[in-house]
Length: 122
Image (cartoon, rainbow, N blue to C red; front, side):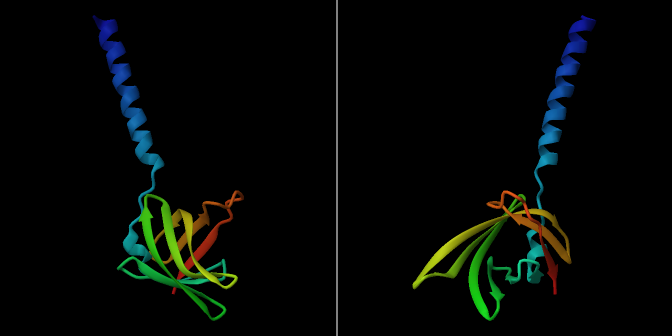
């Protein structure tokens, strides 16, 4: 009986450890921290609005976007992206490593080198 109880407690401990580990792997960031204007090391200035719209500006060129933050993935659906004479919609997904009231660190999910872009709130 003691062996059975010991085995059962070990199984329960393992299950609890696995579920606790899963929640540690997912980063949930507060999307309210994004609201505002950010300067980024990628050369763009980003503005995130509370209605999930926004814009980014670089060298006098502005593109509008809608955004969604789910877990650690920040997805931008960018309009006004010009390719030749056509205007297309582009999707960019950033993996957020850090987000607080004044700073965000993220990298483009498509970037195999995972080069960190630092965003500083204005």
